[in-house]
Image (cartoon, rainbow, N blue to C red; front, side, top):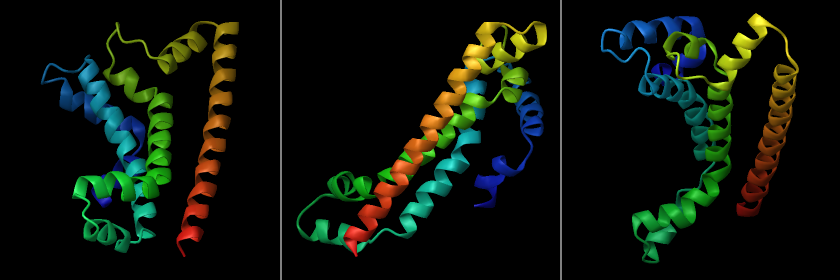
Length: 167
């Protein structure tokens, strides 16, 4: 668990430099593949934490009941487990997306000139000149963050309703 959560603890600059030093000798220093892998590594801890927290309150007797009624393991997962842990999975996915979407340091180390992500464009735009486009993008990012927080709060409330309905 400490290894999985370590990307949350280690500073992003160190992750960026280490990633570059790992991928550069392989010839993948300026590729989409390296960028995707590192962004996935940065998002995994959020998914693991939220899903494991959701699974701690999960009643495994429900899966056993589905199996005793003839459901295959895949059907039991799809029909019983996944709907109950969906708030944790969606929350983890939203946190991972927000973390990846906001990550400019790793992108500066690993992205080539043809890979222009929004945070990288905003960073270079602020460095060169402050334009209304950057202000508009920042406003959209703030609105997106507020919507993300409201969605997470709604999911938390939905999860609480499901838990209290089970008891």
